[in-house]
Length: 343
Length: 294
Image (cartoon, rainbow over the protein chains, first blue to last red):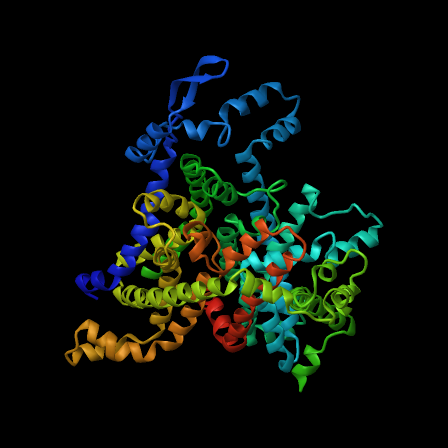
């Protein structure tokens, strides 16, 4: 295809991506270097029945004008990145000096909002991703052995947790584990503990969020593996049987290697998607026990009185850096594949 | 047949496999069934501390409304809380997003599949990086400019943003579909004197629909399921279904209103149900398209 023609074909798509994906990344970076204007104070004389006093008041008019002239706020350099709500260098330094051991240090660091969110996001990503692959593989093996007639309905039901809106899917689970919901109430009965609440304990909340994550994403891995199982080479399988390989050995040495590229594909997609975990935290109202990077950005943006664009910007930049680190292996791999194809 | 004998499983293994599949089916399907059933009850039954069978028989529902099933939750959500308006907004957003992103995506995906130049590969890589960006980080880049230019709160703004967020995925998917359409097809048209666009219009467009339908399904799902963009970029009046449901949770702690959210959830899930019913094959093929080809 000629360069000119290519350009015109790709142009509309490229414009939208540059305007609404590339530019916002720049905008986020710029915002992160600014901070809201300080309140403009004005001295007014306040006269009451007990005489006059000089008082400091917020000058609303002047503040509004300042905001209108310079909506970004004032320049703050990297100040937002290092403050308590983000990388918190000072607090981390203090914690390091005052802590009695590694455990103590981590418990102090994890009280800081950014590190708290980061720890949940990373735990979620690296617990849910492998579990999704394992469960997806087991379900695929199971469904593959079913009679043809019930395969269709089975796949239909299996798709539900993935297709249904994440916010809605997590709400449905949340209502079931509510202290008065069917699962929550039953668990209380089983453990004979009327105060048992999956919402109150941070550990249980983390576990529930991850259970939701696996429930939501396992169908994706299942479908991909299931499709892969249909293409397992029949002659290799037969050769293995003739050589006397047991069922387990055939799965281990024929099926698994065949599915390996798919496993890589699933884990890449899952790493990207799990890193942005957000909706279940809203649905579960879990912010007291678990926050994610996406959630703290959202929280800065939808604040009831004012929005903290600088703070949201800084967290966004840090998140983008995190995503980039996760992406590096993917890019290297795709790069290598492409160059091999060319040669 | 000999292969039947070899494939025969021990009864223990069969039981384990059947058990596993059964557990999964229950885990995947039961929550939806339960919520659908519960949406026709009152809160006292759906959230029954005393006995979960209350939700099955509708004991409190019988006392409060005189029947074992009630449509009160649906009445509250759709009539009192104007969920219908949100449903209309969702339809507008979803249809527009699907049409626009498919139009842009087919043109771009076709170009990427036919280019063969190195920069086409770089563009695909760039799209992959864009695909990985968490949506909320992008949203925090839009908000301030959108406020300043008075673009915030309107449906078209949310639509174009979702089209853009959707593009990387659409490009990848359609690019791989177009790779499967033989090059000779459009090239022979061009030998006959068509321009590249005419060849695309008259030769490729008639055969591309299976791929476009599959990609369209996923664009539909992205737009329909989105919470991040719609919750942050739309004003109260223009809210779509998902943020509306989220707002039910924040404000309605009073007795009975939680059922509005339950019925709204069931209402919003129904279209997805129908979608899988009719397009199961396309969804499965779309999920595997990217994977099997590597």
